[in-house]
Image 1 (cartoon, one colour):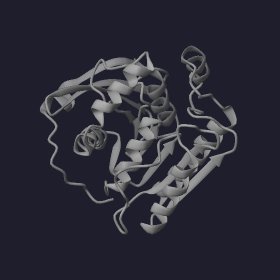
Image 2 (tube, rainbow, N blue to C red):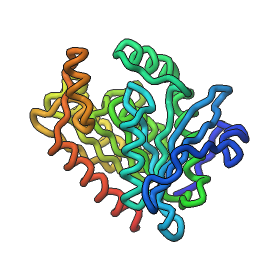
Image 3 (cartoon, rainbow, N blue to C red):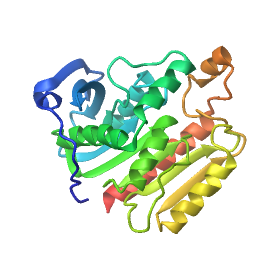
Length: 271
């Protein structure tokens, strides 16, 4: 993978001197770090997870959170990736302390974060550089996976030509004002969506397939019949009941999408 050059400059605070070691060790091997970093004067808080006993450098995976913000679910996904042999960084797209407990707050945070695509890309690229700079990471092997809002983010990074080996979207929005261009989409793309997801209607699904075909991108799309939005998150049912939202956890879809992701990473990182 080629080194990607961009205009964002991470302040010195975002590197080793800015590390805040949080929970240390989760087990004999798994280690985590809470990391503060800055982008354009705003402070963000991410979460790095890796297996300290794995020898040598390994691929890195960025995890982009749901519209609620950088929460425990995102950190748990980073830990799962670390257990699978990767170094994972659950990044922050909203800014430190911005974690929604109500859909209205989530909508407001998401609207502010995505007010222009340059800002979205800057925040993503800052996190990517942090992951690539980690001692355990082979900087030429980077993937990104996102959930809901995060799924849309990683797909847009692929559309913008960001240098990634793989991108995975779980129940993410598939439509975008950005359109992929032939020869510009670098990663292999996996999209996992629910057939009954009211937030990702069928026209978005068909639109993405046509867009990626026209762009000559490597797309695998899996549609789970009858499955609702947020199917990977075990906390979705509680949220659905509290706020009357059409979302639900689905264990089979969650497991199959994770297994497909692991196969994808094994393939792209073994070449």
